[in-house]
Length: 330
Image (cartoon, rainbow, N blue to C red):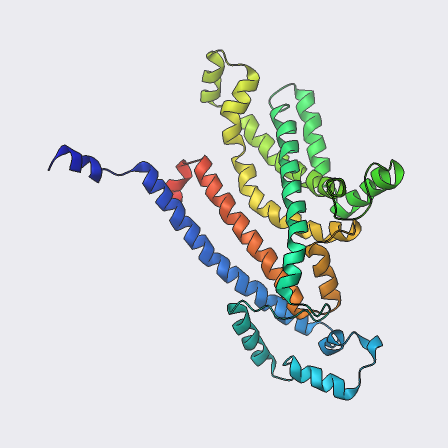
């Protein structure tokens, strides 16, 4: 056997690393499919158990005064006269084919409503997440491991921020910066200025929560031997924090970012209503009120899919930042 063939048979660390990441992503995708099925099932039966008649919701509510013949025709048209188990099986069959149905309240294909309303929510969620991480890094990296009173004051600010309810903070920001100082518009979804107050309302509580975990991790990392070694080489405190300690300290925060996506989307339901923004959160609130089964399940599936995808990406990012974890994940 030649030396060249021996080299070719040697394991490629980069290739093995990518293969482990691929297997990890595949298993997480399979788990995500089960999550989507569970979301669709729970939403279907929960809405069916809600008080009220979905046929009346389809026909415009009780104020529409539909006749008995109209109600019977709508019941047959939407398959609501069939047994619940049959309705469930038919709906799952349509979901597998990618058919989300037609919205009862808007009389539009659910896919069209989702296409129109997804971007405002995605824009709000990503902006809030980025802003939250900027606040986390500014608060923790600059204050952790420094003077005790500065660290204690920053830790108190993090605790208070994490305890703030989204709706209360949103109303406060509206009262001060929209109606009081008139710096930002109180409602709407057009332009970056309409995005500032909703993003801040979502980002501050999330930043407080992530910062608490990141601060503890950073303070432990700053006491590690490799950090002390970096200091002895003459590196400045700022360089040590950003180049050496930060990579290890942000790992717990990165693992929480997948959960943070779900928290931001759930918070967006309230924030989009308060600021009268377009988006899936506001549409979900209105769909549940109207007993709009197809639209409610469609939005729930999109939100769940986004949450699953975010967790997969965060999981892979965590393994990429800390390759040592891949040995346990393989």
